[in-house]
Length: 445
Image (cartoon, rainbow, N blue to C red):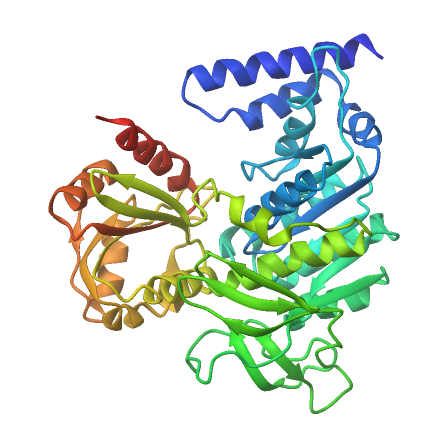
């Protein structure tokens, strides 16, 4: 082993340790230092993975799918490298490998599960060629960073060309993702929800892929689940939802999720209809890789969501759910998840506009906040850098809110004077700090 690689790993581990002492994640710095010392470190360490490398892409659900896939593989007795925190750019991928290495520089891994930011695929794939890509969905996200969806699709298409033997495990209910997989030339398999679940959906909800990518005609839907996900076909050409290799049926939602996946019954205490797609993506990936899947329901039941993905906290008698909401499609699904709980609830919405969030917050006007009128809301507090923008957005749908720029103050007020049931919906850069506040408060006597 090269001395340079060993030195890079030691320096990276030391950086991570110091950052933790300072209350920071430090993953970006750990990866950056390792890459600076040894530019070949990711290529070499990825080659040491004994079996397969999975990457997870898509606008929403990447972190949940990636972590759940890791837990599922570990439940089969496999050793896995994973970027659990959701640090999904090049430095984050490097950090996942180097921080899992032993002090002698070696890794012990059967598989790697790496969440990858769509715009970072072209920087990561030259270092290693994944065996599988899970592509869950493509929604409009951070227009000032990504631009329109066509730009993201072109980036992913170029990345797929770098790894032509990579199998794409694609959400067949998403016309955009399906078109991309079909046009890539890569082998692909599909998963999706076979049948209509909800009798009615808002006709006003933004559908990103409303036009056929092959011919430009408006797509017709036999039904749709949310946003542009559903059973689609083009009246002008042969483009349509493909036959699903892995499909969910008999779906029931609420405080639990209950459905069948290719004959296997799944019952878990998860909220949010979108988690059917997340679970199904993991099921398809494991099956497609030929890994015997045992005790899937038990593994799902033991999985503890982290990093603000429907993460649960209990503070002085108040039950709190923290969840990420960073774009219109994701926020609308958050609203649906909140509405599945018909008991009284307090709500804190925190919106920042830092670089990682996207400084353009005009997407707030594409979210169906008016649905909160029917959600038995006890109080609404807006917080974060753009709290006044959020308050104005709610005012236009006649939902009163109070402003509290400091999220810890807002949480303490809800714990003290709220109804004992609190939902926090925050965008990206607020997630880590809000989670730290909740963990601190949970530990208080």
